Length: 219
Image (cartoon, rainbow, N blue to C red; front, top):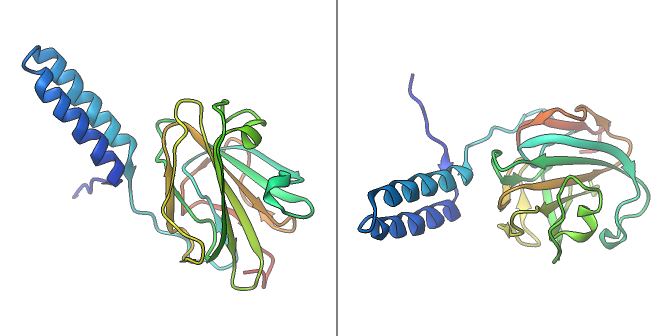
């Protein structure tokens, strides 16, 4: 059986090459330092792995925007900064440093708005992280006019969110939208009439795990 190695994000190659270059020169000082640097560069490259994903063909579903674990499912009033009226079903997904950190859009549609907010470095498992940490909210309007919002929240160790999409872009479900470096979290706000198909503590795979089903005709 042929083993296909995962694709690595472009930022991963940049970081790894810089570390390996430094390791090369450190090798003139100590062979041990060379191998430590080489191993560290490879570990960083693994963090930026970006395997291919196959979104489900089933219609009327929202897929996970991130690899990780379902931290919380709740019906909430979204933060005022999002400008969303009424309650929404919120699903929070926690990504550890061991997870793939490339994020994907939960549904197909048009990117109507990108809202970036600078922030602090609270642990992303805390409720206040969605109000104080660096974050990027993406508004996607589906073909039927219904809108969902997902928010990438940077974590405690590093707070850098890279966005690979622009307002006006047309996305396919499960398409890559960007990456968050190191421990982080993604919140998705869905209409309250969806049927949630995951539970707290469940492992998710970005672009593949079905989070919720829309009622017939809603996608």
